[in-house]
Image (cartoon, rainbow, N blue to C red; front, top):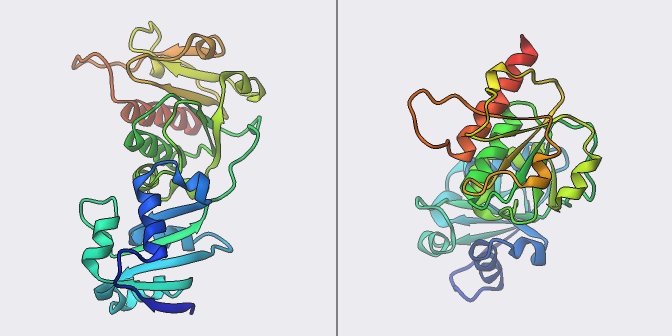
Length: 260
């Protein structure tokens, strides 16, 4: 078990670090540290082989709960803080009683040519980005490529929405459309204006999907790389689906065809 410290001051260097990480979506890049809020994410992190936790920050009541204490004791250092102080620094509406600070995993420098992949093209809402990553991991896709203009993949809101999906994905950040040339798989995209339906399109395995800015759609350079751009049938009407919902439908359809 690591060193245990009782912290009551908002000016503590550790809590100032936590404030930077939760208040700035890209702070993890400068500080080389990621914050994981809540029991589920902390457990998911510890399930990884060789997982290390730099700091566990736990509120005083949670420290008395054996389950949460065992999580905290996996850290190199443990800070026990008053619950209101930890709640003020978190990003959750229902404050998490425990958070981990871990070393930011290194981003992949290059695209793996044959990994079943999803490409995020200027998807800016962190909740949507996290939800798409979660669907990708659930349906067996192993690589996520975030193009410039996409929400920061390790920001607290994205990490929270993905619910541990990050830990099973190969993540490439800051890519541009030209880098997709190294992806040696058929690429598919979606558009509400496409004539071809996703469920009437042959989807090979492995393949890659691109999901784009909801308002602007797929960029021309990326659309030109697609084997097909397909539509999701919406008999109930509506202009388009939320990008996270569209991704879940398309990724599931890929798996359905693969298993059939």
